[in-house]
Length: 150
Image (cartoon, rainbow, N blue to C red):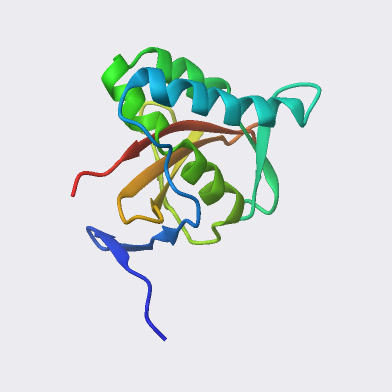
């Protein structure tokens, strides 16, 4: 039985989640954005209020998308295209991964815990998903996702 690849960062070792879904096809913003909006609209239709994904790692707690779309609006079109390409893989990672992420607390925001999950697409490229957790309210938000450079 083959062992899963691990990503070493300093003294920490993380297991990388292998996705079964492929990233979105296309290289242009005009190709990627309709596909990503279609995926997000299906999430929106599943609930009457705010869209969310239930995470296996957080014991089926909800992860919301409020900060994610605001974060994406601040990025350039090229960067948005590069990041949104991995949206279906990131959703699968959030739903199914039980691997321990890198967890850290920002010195400037002691009430916020950030969890960094590592994933690998079906084709091989790696990506990272960052989830922010509020310590007081225990609410979790998808903060960002981005591909790793090889």
